[in-house]
Amino acid sequence: MGTSRVTWTGTEIFRGELRAQTCDDWTNELADWGARGGPDWLGTGFTFQGSSPCNEQMSLYCFQVGRSVRVSPVPAPGRLAFVSSGAFLPSSGIAAADALCQSEATTAGRSGVFRAVLATTSASPASRFDLTGPPWVRVDGIRVAPTAAAFFQSATWDSAPNVTPFGDYAEFAIAVGGSSLTQPGAAADTCSDWSSSEGNIAAGRAVGTGPGVFFYELPAFLICGGYVNIACLED
Image 1 (cartoon, rainbow, N blue to C red):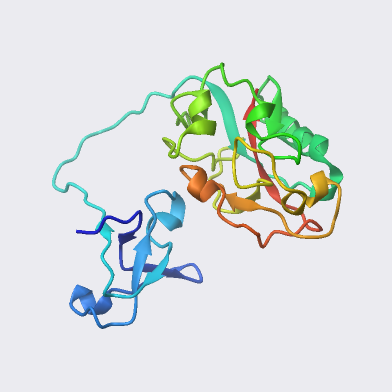
Image 2: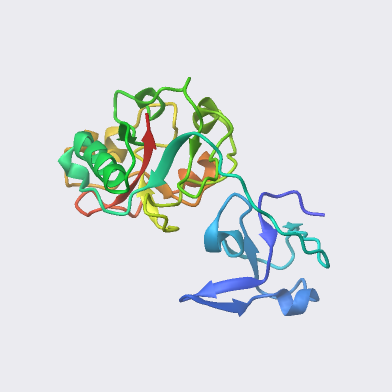
């Protein structure tokens, strides 16, 4: 039995279409590749997070069949967490990122103060928020982490902040500016404290159900001279 944090799935996503990559229907360890999924990912990454040689051991997803139960989830209370629908120009400063979060929350009919989940060279993302308040939840009522502190300190979350304030589900990359929620970022990862259009940005994935995927690209393919999406939290 595999003990990795990835699972065999056999479902590869290529240019938006599903196709099989199954090690000859799971019969041939000498076959080239099998598709794998990531338990720490939401969206398509849950079933396809890459490919691996067929002689590797991995875990499996297991689902019960033959039982149908109607589920009516009760929305969790808490502060709003979302990924921006609009884009932020990194060189415009962290205040502009906060303004984007605030504007989108206001447009969606939410009161309160909202800030971007971004690091600077002198401050961590965690230092920008009140960790003693209620936990953060998405607009669909799903809790991201059990407590506010757990969002910044735990290795895994209950869900991912991958829903816009308007209820759309997103899988795109987001700027984060570092490799930790509790440590400041480096100048090379934060566009020189969000003031330069030169260089790349430390980035992650909105679909991450923990920092391991939320901080996914170091260095990143996101550039300081282009528009990027960001994660936002209510303070």
